[in-house]
Length: 319
Image (cartoon, rainbow, N blue to C red; front, side):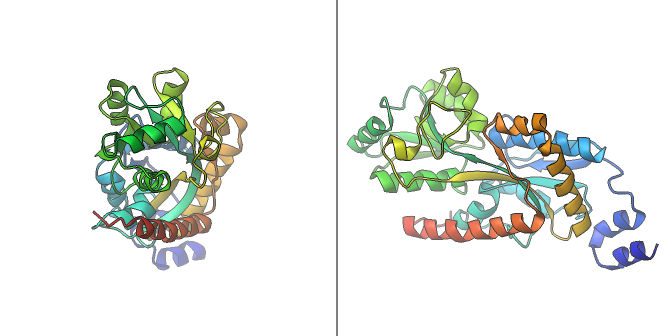
């Protein structure tokens, strides 16, 4: 009883009653996903939601809140009560990249959230449809150089890591292309298939099935992938120094009691220690991480630093 009273008095804000009663979780948990259904973030989120539900014994309900490069959904998490009943799927785009590339982000990606765990990391693959020229990456680069600005590429917004890396690719290869933003990668693929846009730097979690089916082509990947073993790395394909991975992680509003964050991290890590559950992520080319809350918070802060430096080198101003 003394411990419960101390926890209630310790200042966990709106979360304190749940802890004091010792009842968390006593009802369903909402997981806000900041991108539309059907893309890589949505796939990973639904896997994580199911495994967290298994561990906690309560439904974890996915709520897609897309828009503004993921910042609308992320802000909804930041504004929620820190009571353990609203969490969100954070990504490299919604947190470090948004702060660096978007002029008015309504939240602090570090102080505005409680980091729970980094779920996993995945590479980027350059994937395109019939409008993408060239048999391989060298041919592609040569074709784009020959017609500056003519080729169009997709991203899920100018505040995302995919956009930042595409601009970095232009700088490394001496190319210039036309950017077409979308709300989510699931909306990109119909336009890739009909030739409206030529390519996107996307994650295999959203593109590997289409690549294996031969509906789109993959020219290179930022690191070798077991899911796409035939796709060379960018270094092997002729563009050394082009690297980058994308992470997914769970966050909650700032002020979530440490006990709740630690329990979610611990229980989810145990779920993904099971080979069958781990394979659910690996099959989508996501390497499970399941880091501690402190380690995940440090990752977010470090990524803000390197992305800000990259944007400055590229001359990118927040939009």
